[in-house]
Length: 218
Image (tube, rainbow, N blue to C red):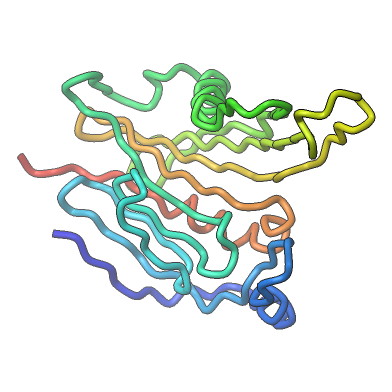
C-alpha cells in the first residue's frame, strides 16, 4: 500500500519574483519557486521513504518506481529506482566499494542514459562529491553529486566550421543517495538546473537526508 502524509518542515521562502518569472512561457531560464514545506512519501510495499517539496507533482509512467517533478521548473525532478534481487543480491551499500568508486559508477550510468546520437553534441561531466553517512536507522547511505553540461552546435550540418557555433544546452546538478535493504540496491535521484540548485540547496539536501530504505515483510 502506498500513501503520503504531510510533515511540517520549515524551509526558507525564496524571492517571490521567481514565481512570476517562472510562469512566463517565453522565458528560457529556470527559476526557483517559493516552497511551502515538505511531504513524506512512504512505499511500504517496496520498502523506502523520502520527503519531497510539497508543490511537486507525481508523474506516472516515467520509467522509475516513483517520479515527482517541479510543476514550474520542468528540469527539476526526483525519482527512486531499485535493483531486482533475482539479478543481483546486495548485503550492504559497501558492496559497491568505497563512496568514490560508487560515484564513478553513478556518473557512468548517467552518461549512458544521456548518450545522444545527434551530431555535434558533447557532454562534460564532473564528480563534485562523494560521501558516506550513518542515518538514524542504523544503515549506511552513500551520497553522490555530479555536474553534467550538454553542448551542441547550432547548425551541425554546416560545412564551414565558423557556421557551427557551440552553445550550452543545459547545465544540471545530479544528486544520488544509495542504500541497501531487502537484498536490493535503492537509489534516490534528484535532478535540478545548477542555477536553481544555488537557491534550493538547503531544501534539496533535506530531501537527500530524508531517504530511507526499510525492511519489507515477506
